[in-house]
Length: 274
Image (tube, rainbow, N blue to C red; front, side, top):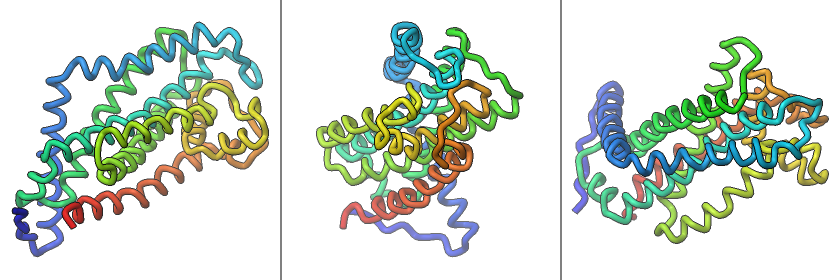
């Protein structure tokens, strides 16, 4: 039986109710994260291996538009791809909680409806900060460096985390919609090509025209292009409006995704049993 919680009357009480419950759910996810170190190491191995593979195996054959070191071109792409790949972690966690009945149990308790999904997003953001720090250290070890001021570095990292925050809500919504983990595997299979049709590993100018246009307008390309610009790394350029305004698009795209999928996720969670 699902109990209907007594909703606080004032806005301040409702806000406090949601924040407290969101933090409780966040601590639950972080506790699981700490108790599964193998899962953490496994999640970090893929981007690290990708850096070594693309940087040293394929890197010698890659040409950076305008010249420059390929590993400096590559690292912002790896940062962006890791942020987008986090959608799989979010999606899997939401589906697992549904299959184990955890979500139903949460909904039977007098908790703020938004607290559960907000708590999920907070814990994933904290995990992503750790992922990004590890990947930055990995990049420094292979020769990547930023060439502009530290303010640009903070701005670039902020845009990368903004992209991650946006795809968290996409992952939560898809996780709530999909019935089981098997169906999630099909969605996950589409994610890898999406991250490849971008400026992650090669410049869109090197692709066929129609494919380069898609890559230019890919939200991942906007964040990666903005990060390259703010880090002072090579690989900028292109004739399209999107290629020349990456910082603006790196703000707009994530905000659009959040504006669409945050309310959809909260609404879907509230209506799960209907």
